[in-house]
Each structure stands twice: as structure tokens, then as C-alpha cells.
Image (cartoon, rainbow, N blue to C red):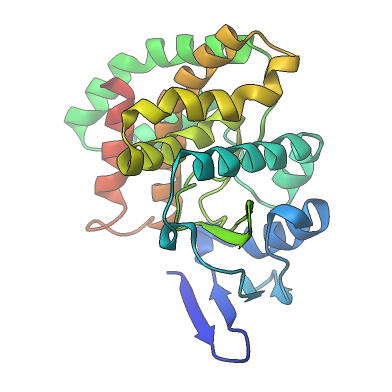
Length: 260
């Protein structure tokens, strides 16, 4: 269970106590504030042994603003900058306790045992195709980094004109960077219509075009968006490991989206 308390002051202060499945979050928040302070909140204090963090008010949520496609473009470009800056920090991220989702078939094998027999049979039949998709994605040679795994407009703060701050890292993984596109792109499409998807995807992918053809990047993005249902399922399992009314249904639904 996650506890979040707003402390009233001249500027509000937020206290967060993480769940056991996201106990790495305070240490991650503190590290990110040193590595990329322009993109994240800087905690006032953390207690990593207890999974506690005291955080400043970071401005209004993105979802409180009137948005157009340019806002989402700016968000995704800045988030991509953060991801690229963290590529050299991958092993440090894992040492902080951030779940390692770089080998997706292994993650699949550990999660598929948690669903009922009918769904497990269907998913097991899909496993060879999953392995093929993972191998194709790995073949593009795009380095793993931090994946927020739940990047929507309620997890993004407006820090100033054209500036955004990313927070709430409890679902995070070390994974393929493009896995982050699933939630963000779907949320933008809900707000603005599906016609914005190619434009937003191209804006996010632009920094990688110096190293990879755009056609390869688009294919990698499509694969990663599909495979990221697996990391989403992993997050549900970590955060709600012992419940049946929340966590288990969402975990099973995310897994089955791999097959759809």
C-alpha cells in the first residue's frame, strides 16, 4: 500500500511512503535528482530503508492544463532526453533496486504462472512469437534505460513554460526506452484523437535518428509498445502481490493484450 500525505505550508510538501514492491523509489528519486535535476523533483529528504520520501510541490499536473499536440511533443522530447542521459547509469539503476526488465522472456515466464489455467495455456502458446518479437527488438541495438512504465498526464508536472517534470517512479523498470510510449501515446490519443500518434512518435524518436534509420525506429517502437504490456503486467504484480480484487485482474488483462 502506498501512502501519500499533503502537508500544508507556504508551498505544499508531499510525504510518500512506498509499498514493498516499489521500495526502490526514494533511492531512485534521490539519484535522479543528482543525475538529471532538470527533469525530476529533488526530494527534501529520503529514508531508503523505510521507503519514505519528502518531496516539494512541483507545480500543476499536466492533466490540469488545456493541451494540444505541441504540449505532448514537448513532454515526449524532454522525457526522451532524460532516458538517453540515463543510458550510462543502467547498472547503477539496477543496483538501486529498479526492476530489471531487459530480458522479457524471463519476465514472461515468471508472470505467466500467476494467471488462471485457461489464460496460461493461451499465453504459453504465444511464447514462441514473444521470443521472436524480443529478438527482433534487440536486433536494432537500442540501449536499455529507465522506463517510467506509467507515463500519463497525472505523472507529469508543468514546471514552467515549455518545461516538464516527471515523477512517481513506483512502476519503473530498466527496459527498452520505447516501452514508455504505450501509456503516454495512448493517453494523448484519448485526448486529441488517434491522428496525433505518428506526429508524437516521430517527435520522440527524433534523437535516435542520428544512430538508426527512422524506419527501423518506427518498427522498434511498434514492437516495444506491444511488449510493454508485459512490463505493465509485472508492475501490477509487484505493487499488488497479494490481492485478488485489484492487481490480479489488471495483470492478467495486460498479459492478454500481448496476444491480441
